[in-house]
Length: 239
Image (cartoon, rainbow, N blue to C red; front, side, top):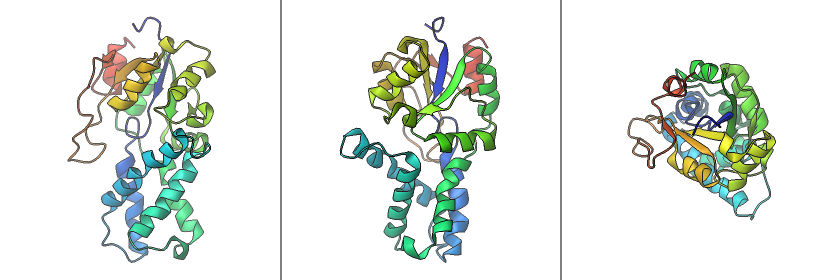
């Protein structure tokens, strides 16, 4: 199967980087400064993330034109603040913008950069994320993520799991869908990629949603490769 694969593309939030800890780390001081230290920072991160798919569904359904994730994150942030009885207009533009850019400053899982560096020796590696180009670029620069290209929703003008998100990524790389493999910690993402004709690799991240995570702990289908982490994935792919 992998003899024909030329490029690996990666889900990023949860698969490459630990979004929950990164957002909580910055939300805590932000909330404390507002005098709302009573709000749990991890719960705030979860509430913000919970609005991610509904916001993109507005675009996938055609009810809204393509809108980059930075703007969706900002709209969702303001909604979460209101849900906690905080008026965003009283917070200040600079503080809101800075917290919104916490998504640009997420840390990779401990082995991720070393594993990606190994995989890059044999394959083209790139994000296939719902994150926009500026977000992915800033994240990679800060964290030392060695992408060959920055791809994803803004390039494809489609949000996963829309088939076009996968098919247009293959097209941009001038390869067939079967020559492209999605690496993800989310079975639903892999299911959509497989339906679009891509190869699939599952790497679980059992603490993405915190210590009580119940989903995506094991593969739901016989994906082409299942690995413990990116270093194990490199080993299994002979890199």
